[in-house]
Length: 127
Image (cartoon, rainbow, N blue to C red; front, top):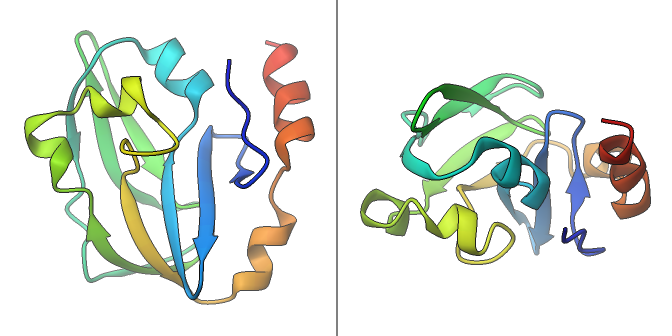
C-alpha cells in the first residue's frame, strides 16, 4: 500500500496535492484497492464551485457506484480526460496519472487541516 508524503488525505479516502495555486484530487491507493476494478469515472462538475465535503462526481466499479467528495472548497477546473478511455489508470497509478480533477482551492490553508500520510495510514490500518 502506497502512502505518499506529498499529499494530504481525507477520512473518505480522497487525496489532494497542491502545485502552485492549483490542486490535484484523486482517490487513495487504499480506496482503489478496496473498490476493485474501476470501469467508469463521472465528473459532471467542471466549472462549478463546490464546498468542502460535497460530492463532485462518482466512480463506478463492476458492482457499485461510489460518490467522490471534495477535500476542500474550491472551483473544479478540469477533469482528467484520460480516464474516459482508461478508467483503470486510477487502479494503476492513483497518485499520478490516475488523478481525477484539478481545482482552485478557495482557501489553501484548509489543506493543512487534512490528514498527513502517517495519520491516514493509522486510519486505514484500523479497518
